[in-house]
Amino acid sequence: MSVDILEKIQTLRKQRNAVILAHNYQPGPIQDLADYAGDSLGLSVQAAETDADVIVFCGVRFMAETAAILSPNKTVLLPEENAGCPMADMIDAPQLEEMKNKYPDALVVCYVNSTAEVKALSDYCCTSGNALELVESLPKNRRILFVPDKNLGGFINERTGRGMILWPGYCSTHVLIRPEDVQRARQTHPDASVLAHPECNPEVRSLADELLSTGQMLKFVKKSDTTEFLIATENGILHTLRKQNPDKKFYPITEKAICPNMKKITPEKVLWALQDMQYRVTVPEPVSSKARKSLDRMIEVLPK
Image 1 (cartoon, helix red, strand yellow):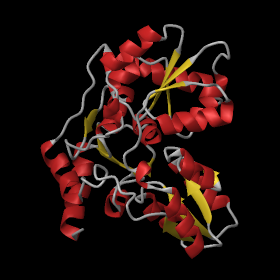
Image 2 (tube, one colour; image 1 turned 30 degrees about the vertical axis):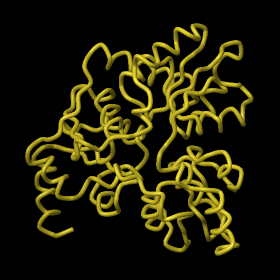
Image 3 (cartoon, rainbow, N blue to C red; image 1 turned 60 degrees about the horizontal axis):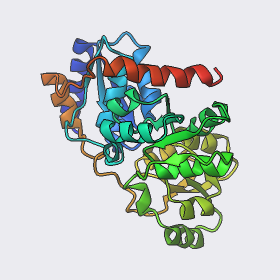
């Protein structure tokens, strides 16, 4: 990234009273220029607590939507309008309505990796970091319909035995991580601990030493006495892990674990977003208010 582009971004950031957010899977230069880097919901909550007028969300569309839901009075910009999430697109509102009609007694829990319309039809929203805790807090006499990630849902089922009804969605990046990749990586780095995201398939999860969200991975590594780690999630997080832990070594399970949508944003696009105030992401009513309720219910039932 040129000094000229960075200086222009810094100038416009002040002029617009903007805050720049970057997800852990973004390219390293994007994470480095951001005010905050982290997971999607955590970033949206942080941005809502600032006095910024503009939120530039370096991530994918559902993340920018969540920021717009939590900060209705701020302008939310997505620097790349075509940065989407294939898993979020694997279920839409009519499909969820059909499932709700099929299981009218079920509580609907949606992963935050979903569209605003799906969140609006859900009883609770969750993150990969709090999904287990959230489901364990729900009434045992109610069935749970979990959307859209069957792998995260399967992980929760393994830990809770709740027998949830799972929508057959999945992360198209995490499924590229195969059990043979884990086994091969372990042979190459026998002293390394395997940290895997629960969006991985069951075979990969069974081979991991720890199953953690991106935020949990960052916290775990800082406290761990282990000095080598094999990472089974989107490889963008390796930048953050290495930056925060220069004395430890991190290796990707596979070089294939790259989300193309997460790599669409460049410093130039961040600059253009601030220059032209593009591309604005809004969530209309009543979808916004209904989606906000599913997020608020999550916050209410989890310990502070």
